[in-house]
Length: 74
Image (cartoon, rainbow, N blue to C red; front, top):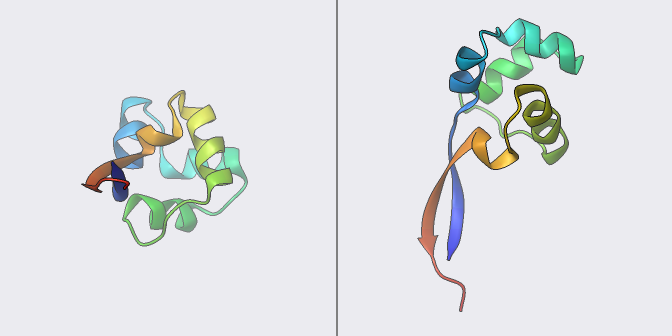
């Protein structure tokens, strides 16, 4: 089966950890505006950023997005 990336779930993870976008940005040494782009689905995270965010939030990279099944591999 194949998947496409759906909605970013970063906002939900930040809320569950009582962490602000600014606090996450500080930990990653990037701008809050960049975090806001991810949260509002205006830009996808690179694999490196996703790995670092997942380490900070204690989740997996896959947990950062919804995944939609689009078909199978032949």
